[in-house]
Image (cartoon, rainbow, N blue to C red; front, side):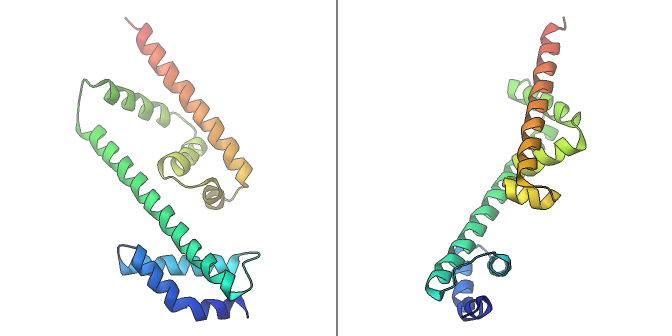
Length: 165
């Protein structure tokens, strides 16, 4: 049986499962749509319905987990940004956050982009590679260089501050 026929046959079950694990019906529809798109693009999905069915459920589950993780990361980032922009504090954490933000702003756009995709938005390397249309290894190299550059700038900012009277 073809992939498309498997999908057509499983569609009601896939929707039921996606609706049961998502908060809103629209989110469930998105999960099914994304899972079907992945199944159609997959190089070698299971051929037999008995293997294809759990494979699709795992795909939906993984997509949901990824989406929840992304939402959590975005929420935490927005909360941190709101806190940083709305409060003036003597808290050392606040001061460090401000130094990190200042150091981040000095990075090249390529470094800011990769740090944002991976460390702020929580994309996986493969997802980031698809976003910026480069191989996974390039993403790994760029994130390593960007993290090092950010760390060096933060260290420089903190050591400059300590040496200032």
